[in-house]
Image (cartoon, rainbow, N blue to C red; front, side):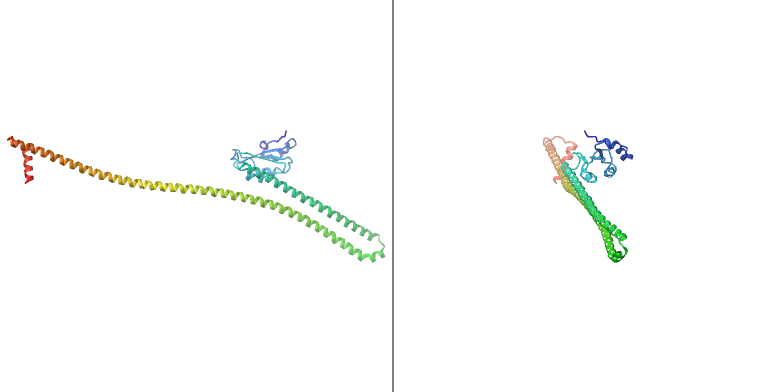
Length: 312
């Protein structure tokens, strides 16, 4: 059984101290990272998690309760013993997320291996330079002792030779000191170059991801513009149909008015013919009365007079 206390229950104002209190009993430190989107809570992020490394030796169990684990996982300074957990239902593609976390693990292992090589090389250089320095210092002590114990006459004869040898030994010691400083500086610069290469690779990956996100946003905008163009064309087509419908309605109304005028004209013609027929029937009856010698009414007499005047 592994014990992993959750730092979410600790006092955030005194987080490292409380973590140290339970570290002897813990196998891991469980750290819940929440972004306020995947879940409602908003907790700590990479800067706080990375700062907890100082003074703590137990590995971390980093629980990513966030929408985009691929974007945030490389920001954590993890070790090979750490664990990173993410949710399958996050917005990043799960198998790609696993591949990115494994790649991060491999990069960390390679970085630690190179740093171990640098440390080992420094130790080896230090051993070599230390041994040669000791040999030269021992030789210097022997020459100084020889100068102190050699008789004066012989010392005078060898003074120039000893001085040259002592000067040569001093120059060699200074050269070894300079070589040691240069080797240490070279290894420091190599470590800085490796760190810069890692940062450059991380920046390239970040730029690539931002480029992909920009392409995705550009594609989304293109889809939006395409849909807007389709909607505009549909609106233009609907407007054209409305104009055609209005024109057709105007034609129908004109046809209706024309039909109404024709109906009125036909009605007037029918009414005129009906009156003429009634008038002819009335005149016929009047003439029949005259033949029979019957007396006419005033209205019948007026109608007969109008007809005679019209014929004249």
